[in-house]
Length: 162
Image 1: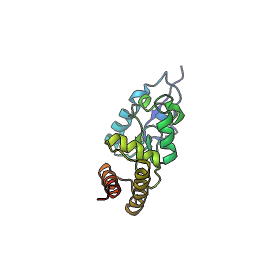
Image 2: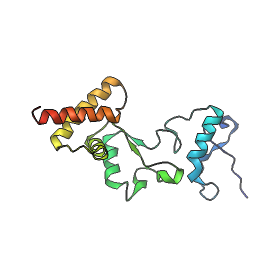
Image 3: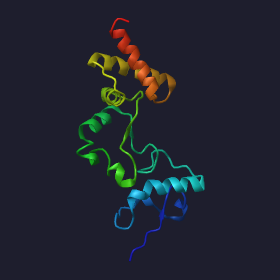
Image 4: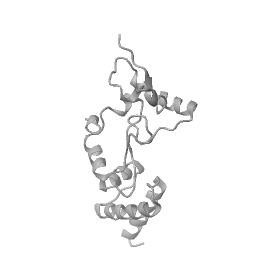
């Protein structure tokens, strides 16, 4: 029998161990517990996992890019592995989180508008996108929902002559 000595995060990397999330054998490991285990190791060891670490990094299932958000809108529900090698739930994660920032596109606006119950015309959505990109660039970070709502309300107010 072949045994695997998995390691979460960076612990043991120098000892030639394989990271658990990089082992390709679903029969030996319950991947649904991977995120939970990674969080526990993180808490107990104090070692932070890079945000971009496959499957267990905090940013592993986030999308800021407008084009990728478009793919998400078009295919994720029916074909999630078009975007990711596995469905986020397979490794104990929630569905992808769409971010709003300077790399966002019109699809990000539609996703957030739907999530927050904000109806925008196409012209309003384009104006919101322009303001989102400017604000995100100035703040040097992605925006919060309240910042997005503030922008959307400002743009909608201008459109009604207020």
